[in-house]
Image 1 (cartoon, rainbow, N blue to C red):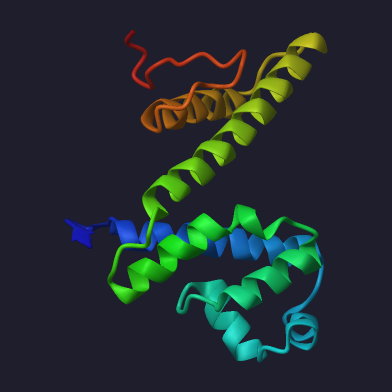
Image 2 (tube, helix red, strand yellow; image 1 turned 180 degrees about the horizontal axis):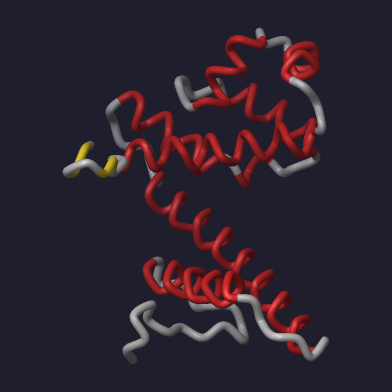
Length: 164
């Protein structure tokens, strides 16, 4: 959807992008090239390319194989895959919304904990906390608040505009 000159993705595109980001992370974590993945998954490199670019939603068996190659539990990707597949087929996935919410909450929690650890490390070293970590802390807290997920211990929520 275009809004003025700014591109704003529709919800389906956001759901698909979440899956694509996770698939790309699997590829990176596996350390394999597209050709090597082709041999390991028995899927053509052109199909893999379409899956990794978000043009198509891969079959679940392909996602499971990519997870195995990257040593990741496929259950972590199931909600995002169900939601993307449902979006592409124009029908709601059974429990997709709740599953996607749970997956996003886990991701936000993991990110929040990492940010808190990084900030604590900077403070223990006596150095200043870089602006990007402060921004990451606020973004993680905002995301947790939007998902009604408690923020990670040590993570404070402050509105981005500075108001309370």
